[in-house]
Image (tube, rainbow, N blue to C red; front, side, top):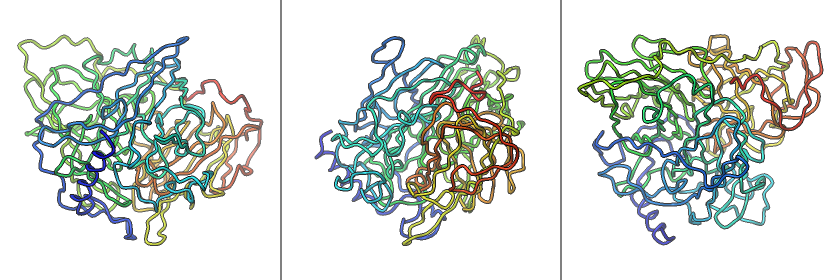
Length: 589
């Protein structure tokens, strides 16, 4: 599409937009959501099949390293038969992007080329938000305007050095202007970690919410030999699900607020790029890899039928990384009522449909909006439909029965190994009638905000939520174990948090305690809220993994924002090794 037709599309979108679909105007200093009447056209549910993302083949291979050259472009795509085509941005000309599959310990390299994108953004850029102008972009040449269109792609959950991490200020523009920490066109990805299902997505400072909403998100996975030996449902019985919500104008264009809002929720379910699709399954076991790819919305997932009887159980066997300690049944008779996933959390489940031939189920969402805040009820209750076929003979199914599934054990970090406990506060402030979210009282790029764990050491972070929002907190580089929840961080984690994670839900008034080891790489990495509206407006800081002598066993507590202070208790030498370290106990396969 040429620039003129792009501008015409944008103009129609702006003329049709009378107000933000859901959320609050950026100038109003409050944090409660205002749920308006549905702004999208009324669309019939379950009249199109669920698309399954295609596996992306590498473009070349050299010395055992697969190379991918992926264009980032603007295009139109139909998301519902009764909705006009929608203008989107995406990887490889599709939304969501193709599925990238890697193998544990087999390196790959990826280049994302955005040179074909237009110079005007598909959505409105709010220049009050940090990173959108030279003045609020630390380290940027002040004489060069920050381009309106710029992207950088991050592989969420990947253990990788800072230069290849796709961090927020490493962006490039279609004209070749680059961010202050841009280093290379190719991302070198070692894949030296436990198996996972995750996403690659845009991470651009100040406009990540816009770029991701425009379509810059896809799924990737790292497979492993131990995973293959489990005999999980595979091939056509292994279904990736990317859950999102969007709002649309009557001409099919995306509806999103013209100025920043602290909360956004679309009024339409979009699964794998299709509005309210259906999936036809055989009466047998299926594996579902579920990713919450929404900007802001939490999903609380359940299966339902008309009778509310005989509903199959969701058997969760994997969290963000690796495997759970044991399979967690989710459903009416399970350990949990629903599978709760905040933005960019993941969960993998097995569902057995063998006793449900001819039945129809609906994947529903009962999460309140906002989740964990003032209760205004679930406004997006249905997501997709699952139809079980009724063949003359049941299919042969040799996959493992999830009730008998024995998961690989993981090497746990010891709490006694923690050299430091850090109090990490989640806050908000209001300046010039603009709500700004903060970590430890700082916003992104502010001096004094960096904490400095040492290479090879283990720490406990106490994430204390002082706001009336729930926040999914994500750490780059590391995985962690959730070791406590509740008002004082002393309650047990949820059953499906008994495994390795990189993103954790922290509810209002709650303290969540996580245990992690800072290994492999030195350098600066971000930690942030993964509600993209919050991440854009300051709720992201850096931590810096430093080389040198680590502190030994002790209960030292560091004041937020300071460097590595003195801990209490006996000190012992740490592990000041090379920049890239061998796999730690967290890499448990």
